[in-house]
Length: 359
Ligand code: GLY
Image: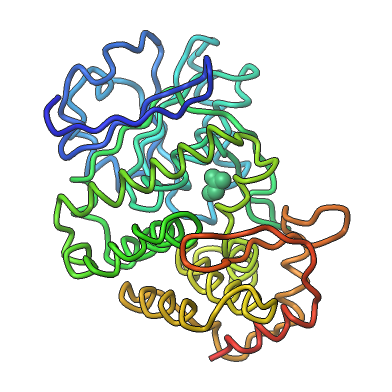
């Protein structure tokens, strides 16, 4: 198809394509190579009414499982809803789920696919910028537990990811900006040229110029696909993708899931991580300021809410999956374009970085 980009996530016999383009959901032949017979689409009411008719292949006639919308529904109950539907309708092992929605739908659907009858296939059709550039790629699936975000889950790769950037036109601006946090993250951890390109083209991106959007989605997916190919199960470099996430997850949990969007929480987390790095003598203030300024260009928070209890926030951070042998593991920027992983950061340094970011 003209104007459609294709990236392969290389994972030997589990390799899969990411298709990116404008209006590609109307391409009838997109899934013609996939021979699963029993598809079921998992989505929510809003996405169904806004976008389902855009899918022009036979998928659209398939069965739908409608979940409630929002991070607070990323739980066991929603997963059970999928299992119930599949069991009642006698879906067998050769079935395929299709996650049609944002990160919440993608993560729950992937987890249900990973666990239903010990694992069935699934396809990701992400509908938010954040899920297009991050959560739909790489096979992290899961749900939240009352004691922590994404605490229950599995690595389970999709068999294809289909990204139709036209869908972003109806995405609320706040959600778009939250997705930009993950895009900016790729620049910080891996690609200074990309970071500078985003800074230079921020107006075009903010206006959702088609070419610029395809460029940032493609570049982000390329960086992520490359990292996932090298380290699927996060034994080493995949952890770089967690920049700002230890802080961000704690902020989300502290405030109550959904109060701040994930992208907003990790954006503030990038700056806290950068501030830890400055104290650790591995980053300079000029780079910190460049990151801060770019986050502001996309209206992302650079400070924690007033009156936040830092000790309580720190305790929540200790629940994060990034604790290894009782030591907190941090991802810190070295400069724009490079990041590193360390377990050698004292609590005092982290508390100071947190305090310096309270409004
Ligand atoms: N969102 C981080 C990862 O997929 O590893």
